Length: 107
Image (tube, rainbow, N blue to C red; front, side):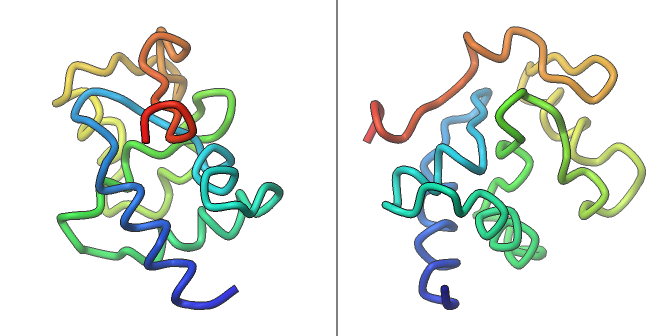
């Protein structure tokens, strides 16, 4: 996988609507690379400070904020989600099934 894959991941992430979340695996599956969820995580981390890539909206398949340690500050990922009215309790997205955005269905 190359930086071309990372670019595709970033393009999909940019389409996640405000107040919705998706998973690393859902993006990987949409890009035809099921089983590459970890690579999607690396792509999110590589998005760095690009404000156009809403990496905070990408979580693990159970709705856990597993990538939070890649954000500056202790709770930045959670704060960004909460600013979009996404409720987080103990690093877990509440109402995950309702808020889940599936690129296979939405795009």
